[in-house]
Length: 634
Image (cartoon, rainbow, N blue to C red; front, side):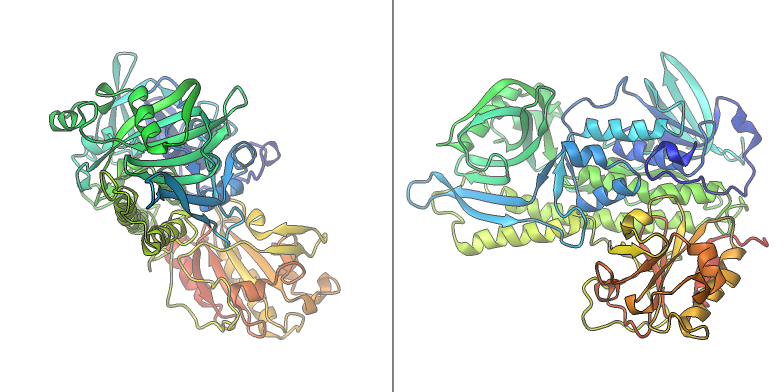
């Protein structure tokens, strides 16, 4: 595909490994993705974008169509950053509801009627998109699938149900994963090098490999409604938590529907004695079979009282679910040689309340996608040797499992605050400390669920004990290995255009070396010039194709007169990636880098910082890349 046909499109990654000859058949693939929800579509889209063709990747889904309404409803700041880097955020930012404030309503100590006890900003200042944007899951799936079709003519194979999956290396060592798939009543046996289960909380892949979610059982029953409301409640257009003596409701403003009217999502805590919920739970019956949207709306009306809450038109979507916090302790299933073959992602490996669910699932896929692509294309240090474990792929579990653990712990804490009691007395929890407790819990959860504070632990891809770097005392957003690189607004040297660093580093599957040059940038024998010369002459040429890109930021007072003032490798490798670091924002102050010393930063393909080194210690970059990438000479 031509990169001009789609925003932020990039050239495919270079491929070193030969394609298995068998994948020319319609039952042999390099990757099979099970599930076409947000996680599965994100992963399939990324693999196609990075250069794996339709004959290499198959995505199947049991449903006939994608989600049309309801389900997950919000995108967090980091997810929006990633979608922007993929050229997919525009429709979401245009059509979604931006929600910067959060209100809490509680009973009055005088007469018990609900009143607003708090109104707070809930933003993530370090992100370009500082607050949640709500839009229904079907729209997200539509955008991802449209993106996929820009790279792959086949898209998703629907009405295809996974019957079984297992590893059979003896049958085919090159394509050891067996997947039995039923389509239109016919069961077909497929083989692949890897299989990914992104098929939700009731994952057929997880069941096939004999894994189970572990954790707390169901504790709370909740109803969810998408509707156009008729109400005099003042905060219906804000995210709001309403706690009355009749129960609890969470209000989520939503985008416009097809008729142009604003939707509202209501999460309603249902008393367990209502509609036989206790009986349903004991007997394992479907909660949808024990209630209906009218019962959920009636309970919401009781909580909203004395405010009026009515329905305009029909309920657009509803569901009923149980809050439980469960996690899969094993995200990767390996073969007899300890090589990861089957991966699980999204709700297939963690379940919790709707908080951040779609976001964490998509970020699982974003973490896994580039690692799978590198391994398949022969770009990792061991990926051409089928008898060795790929250490890059192994980091998927090490990085994403702790994120799910943290999410579930926050979810457990918030669920306790969110529905602390079945009924509130007139005076219960009306103290300032009670409100502050809820707000404090909410702030901690917002900081985590935004995705911007995720920090991956030490690994082959994240070196926390790198070369010493001089950070200034005015550091706003420290360059911490394992965290995502914050955005900064810069001025490009080549054409004088103003740009965002995140937009310049769009998701094309490449590693980046970001050089924050020091105050001797224009000195031909200075530390900056020596580091840039070494990177251009001794580092970049020794790795495949353009798999590592160089970015350079320099202090404003060191603006070069022309290209002749710089090492020739700078223009060669960074002509359109050379920036004035303080013409708009001051990148040095923002990142806390001492302008007199500078720094070198390795960015992984997912935008997380892999390592920070001093300009003098540039040789450690070679050690980093050699440990995880294949060198040209090999």
